[in-house]
Length: 280
Image 1: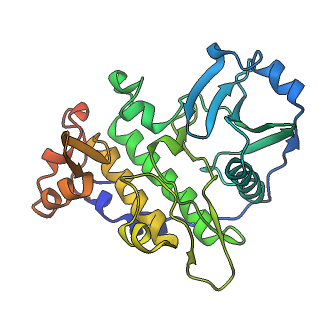
Image 2: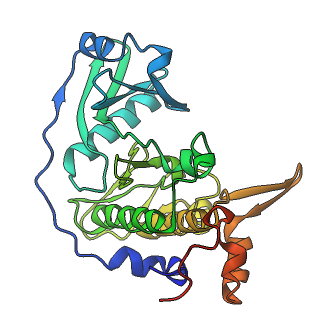
C-alpha cells in the first residue's frame, strides 16, 4: 500500500471480503483462578492502567485480565456491554474473549494475551525508541484494523459501532497483526437503523465532529477515528499536538493541507528514514 492510500479510509475499510465465523467459546472464571493466574494482581504483572482499571498478564503468558477499578453503575454497564459484544463476534482482527468473572465487587474480563502490547506503546510509549514499526508493519496494522472494523459494521449481527477506535485500543500479537480491542463503549445498531442517538463517548482527538456535536453514533464515527489512526500511523504524531499551554493542533488540520500538495515527506514519521511507498 502506498502513502496516498492512507488518505482513502473508506476504500481501505471496504477493500477486503469478510467472512463471518461462529461465535467464540468462552467461560466463567472464578476470582480464585484469576488471583492465582496473576500472582494476586501483582504490580509486576501489570501491563497497563487506564480510567477503566488495570490489565494484568497471567503467569502462563496466554491470557490477559482486565480488572475494573471501582464497581459502579457505569463500570457495570461497560463490563456487560464488552462481554456481550465480544461474546457475539469472532474475527482474526478482533481481540478474542476468553472469559469473565463477576464475584462480589469484582468485575474482570479475560482475553488472549498480546505479546507486543498496543500500537500506542510503539508509536508514543515504552517501545517507541525501538523503531519496530517499519512501513510494511504499519500497512499490515492499518489493513488488519480496517478488516476488524468492517466486520463489526457489516458482518456482526446486529451491526456494532465501536466508538473508541484509537492507538491504545489496537493490540499487536506476536507477528504484529492488529487486534481491535476494548468494547466498553460499543453500541449495537438495530436492524435497518443507520445510527443511534446517544451520550458522546470516546477519546478527544479521535471523535468525529458531527458525533461530538450531536451525539449521533454511526459507522462514520468509527471511520473518522480510523482516519485519525491512519494519520497517526503514517506520521508518528499524536492526534492532538500541544503547541503551547493554550494552543493545540489536530493531526488532520496539520496533515491534510500537506497531503493536498503532495508533500508526503513532511508527513512521514522520521523514524521511517524515508523508507515508505508514496504512490501506488
